[in-house]
Length: 160
Ligand SMILES: [Zn+2]
Image (cartoon, rainbow, N blue to C red):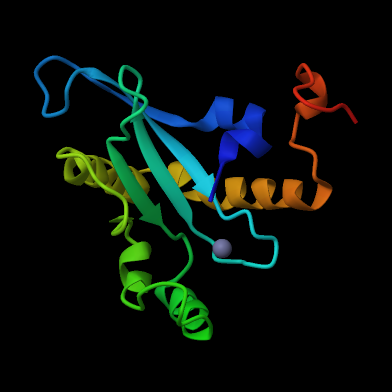
């Protein structure tokens, strides 16, 4: 999985969701960014996002790792059956409603953050729809090899 910012920096800058936690909530007070990661294998079309929830004041320790798939349960069932070695089969059902990543180490607030995320995808159709749009923009850059907007940023290693 690769950080969406690496391939689509402008879109990621504009459309990465954050929530703010105040002093009297369940979360430690901070800004929590829902940073998107997508599959960077051009031969794979797994249509899911890994969300790494990062608190601004402790960016080295992610608060949660959430997986979400916007396609139907049926899509993921077919996809996993073709690739049984890839992941556990029961993941397909959980994916469509978002789930905590089973391999990553989660903070004690991960369950709460998952609930927040599930609320956002259930109640905000624009928010839920953006992942498919981001996935397609991300995948398009894998073919071109140039990150979107890269020519407008200072060159890092090599110019084209
Ligand atoms: Zn994939």
